[in-house]
Amino acid sequence: MSELKSNTVSLLTKFNVTPVHPTAVPVALPQCLIVSPSQSRRAMLASGANDAGWDAVVCDDKHGALSEFHRTRFELAMIDVEAYGEGIPDGYRDLCEQLSQESRDLLLAVCGHEGDPMEEIWARQLGVWLYLPGVTDGDDMMSLCSEARKIADELHGRTAQQEVS
Image (cartoon, rainbow, N blue to C red; front, side, top):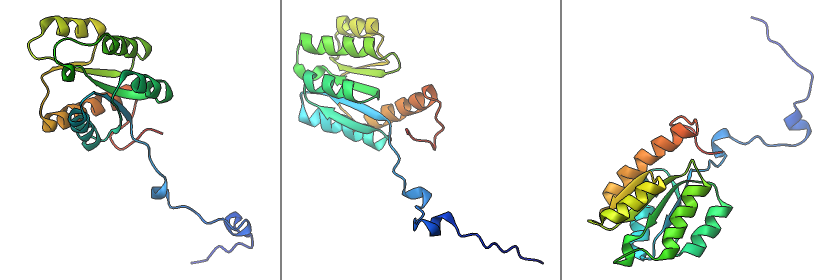
């Protein structure tokens, strides 16, 4: 069998470039915005999102959330209004409304009060992807975030192995 020999110098050698292994390239995860005034709830929601393959950006107030929202392209947002006790502060109603209006391809989940039909009607009128009354279990959040990930991948034309570039 004959061997092909070349006298040309490899461009990599000529310019003293070391090739990078393809798996060394960092891959971005889809972004998830989490907003809750409760530290324990933020931790629970972020844990579920991270375990399901999301990069969670956690905020404790409306202003931080809006700032992050305008800086980053989120595919999922989870807003916890239940942590406030009775009723939803107007700022959080505004936040939910603004997120639903400004990003049509955002999966918006509102964690609300159990047994409050008016709140659920309000959330449904906003067009939220998911209304979650009385969320308390982190295991359930991982499952829900996994479903959101599948939907987001489908919406953005990604296969299960692809990540956000």
